[in-house]
Image (cartoon, rainbow, N blue to C red; front, top):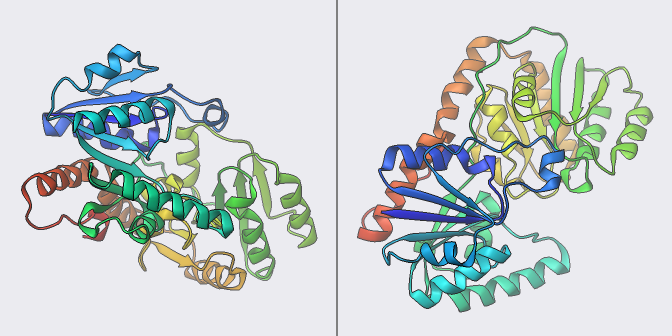
Length: 363
């Protein structure tokens, strides 16, 4: 069988899944991408992943697009509906050819009046494409919720996420005091200001905060650090490449992703794979990965709750190797291999019926 994934770029956030699927399924896996990498992602330290076993075609020609529809049994999975120029054309072709279609998508920005308009667009897309789509891989908690809200049939919606290739587990370096980390773009949506406000309420606690990233709100964040007199506890770093960033995670005791909205947040995967507990908001798609043993979830923009949860983690003390290794072991549930097995079960269910598979992080 052949499975073709239509995406905007060659994303490291699906590389572990795609390479594992190619290796373990015996299927022909093709990735059709508009381009290899965006300039913005490159500036953030993203690197092209090793896609061993996957046939990768970037900037495909019309002939190459048409070739993917030679076999009527091919499964075509589109990253969103009309997400990018190439995938939009291919989706229309798939509909005309009555191909087997799946959709893999993050939630849209659901906040405010624009979110209401996007919901109406989602309803229209369901009315337009429901008869042609066999299944939906809904990324994150809000992805599932918003497809359900648009009245897509429940039996077509499956939980999905992002799956990264972890770097070799770093050797933990004991560096007191308790070390907290944020890494990502310094933009309002990421909510780093909420994190600093929360830590400003914990000045009597012993902690350090490292902020890795760049963006337009950095001057505001620096002002907040001065306002709370945290200059000796907060350090700013530029973006790091992926391997360096994951190794840096392993030297911290807590990762915090306080986003006001985040379709997923793959750095949550990276933290868990390095054995670092996570606190994130309920508006992060990856909050579905968090349980009582690996972190906590707070209500988005609730600074008091965030401060209380951080204080609880600080009170538990620095992460010892036994706990870190236990978290790393649990993170096998979000490996590329686990995702590939889940996907194969999903395809079997869609094709043959039977019990609906359960996402591996919920098993």
